[in-house]
Image (cartoon, rainbow, N blue to C red):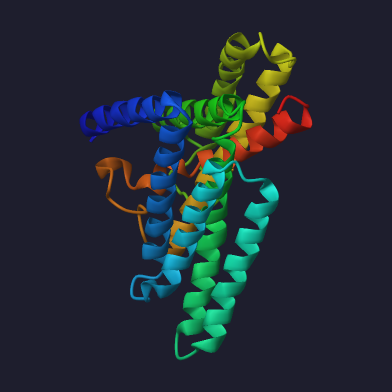
Length: 267
């Protein structure tokens, strides 16, 4: 299993870096494809027998967010698109109601919120002038935190988290993931100190907060999978699961990194 996971992980990291650093259009297209795949996966496990009529609405929302991002739309229009999509979902559920349609409408509303709206935020942020700062903080903390938590949890984890949502997670792994965010802050400070007024300690604090929030994002994804009775969102990436399995932490950590940097006045 490990021998299969490592090459796939390296290939995914390389592809992500290539698309993100290539330019704004490849970055937007890459994230748009990931967003559509993750939204489709989430709908598929939540509504295994339901009609795709409702599942298409969250997909159209993500596509609309990608289009708005390409034309450098403002956050106001994302809010308008989100609330319009939510109203359409509920209106269709009411107008075309029959047995089960109410449940399908609520599932579509759930997917619109998670992961649809979160990927919409990623698409918007990917086209900002200083997009690299929140993406670097969010992605690095997610990657390093997940790796540290997995390694330490398997080797030395003895105290399980008191939640049946993710029974294999341990307190030792979670603490290791949080601690691993501190050198990530040092790396970000070294990369961006020429154009960012944040101090080293501020970068470390932002990375620590984003790392902890990313772990909660992982638990949130586990909650959705357990509620649907699924181990992974899909098997698209083999032993790594689906696209959403790889973005579950980042859709929490990257927007929070943007918010922290925005509050600090550097975005």
